[in-house]
Image (cartoon, rainbow, N blue to C red; front, side, top):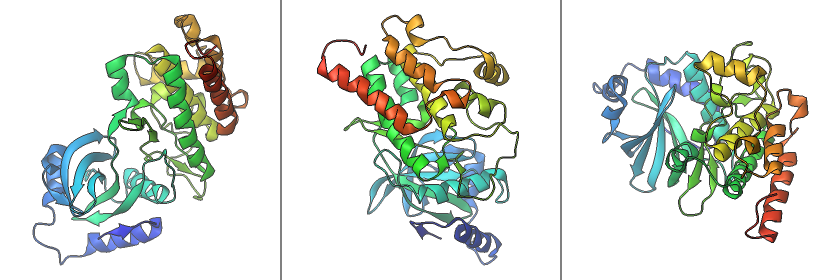
Length: 324
């Protein structure tokens, strides 16, 4: 079963029901499902959705992401839902929502969905492959970035998030591992839409009062299970900006709960007070992005983009001087 873009969530659910209840399947239909359930590495070398599955690019809470090769389209990315998540589970619903959301988005700074469907009882999403490294991997290698480079990367991510918000979608999981920098063009690309909140949907999968996201980069309202909005993504991007500049996240507790409590209540230590080489005006942008109360943050991506562009333009007009 295979769907071309655009994919409709309800159509896919209907088709999945038919796939899962059809008894006249090949005897070996469960082989890939069983292999994946046993160990994600077992799928390497197998064929799914006309793609030969290669190395694992990442493993998330609900899915495994592989590099794959398509005979006609070349290198692709295939994300497969872990079979431990039943079709009716919350993770399955999130996977279907991710398909629906990605099929609506089109921007140079966003990962692009090519098709999606279900084959051998495995849900999959096929996406374009971009050679590069996530900020998480780059930070492992470089520890931290120069203020100029950090500003450029956050600007690229801001344009991606603006495109997401324009589609009335909140990402809810902005963090270094979900932002990729391409090797050739140094283009910033936003990844992983598994935790999005789609404002066009009548109800959210996440129950009210439940916190979702990555504690190290979650906004205070996320940590407290309160209502989120577009400014929630701005906070998470600010926490990512802080990490790029300083070389560590803004708040790190001894466990997830302690980290979330710090996000919600502990004052932010400004980047330039930790590292004096960081210009104060960059610190002030980070501080505004990470205000505890959403009303005190940048209210939309356009406001943030304007300030970042001013910084970068000032730097370009004074080559060799700091962004101050």
